[in-house]
Image 1 (tube, rainbow, N blue to C red):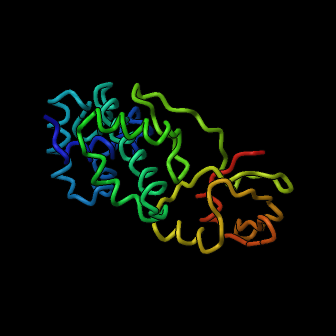
Image 2 (tube, rainbow, N blue to C red; image 1 turned 30 degrees about the vertical axis):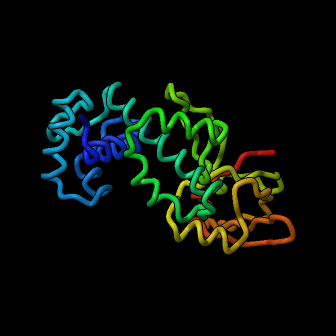
Length: 218
């Protein structure tokens, strides 16, 4: 039986290693989950022994096919619960991540399949991230960062890279959400800030914001 802690490590490796395929350093995992490196090394040995990961001391770790399957299943549950919390329980998109962190460890496959059906099989979560189906397949979403957008073209907001409460509250306070249509008005070379127009509003956003907002051309 896989433990909750093991699931958290597998999910961290998956995200840090770009779907678990790339090798991730012990220090990167330690920083991500805020655990000392020696404890990380011990856990990686366990994951390797159980066939979830390929771990080589001093080199790093990536996930086996078995480990990737587990990670994708955890992500599916997490994102479905986020949809449920927003659509059915009136949570805001900056509130759901922490709650979904707990709910993602529920192991009832029937419950998750019924939840998926109840929500009418959503393909993205409240932050715009794709939700894998029960077979692990993702629907690919074509997107670019706001910092890459072309002046004068119209885009639609389709996601965020930073899912922190602070960033999502910033977007809420400026009335930017998934589906908001955005036109890039100006780019400032000095600090890479970007002026955008949406509806009747114009806003100059920082480089940090421009690197964390995903758009799709419309």
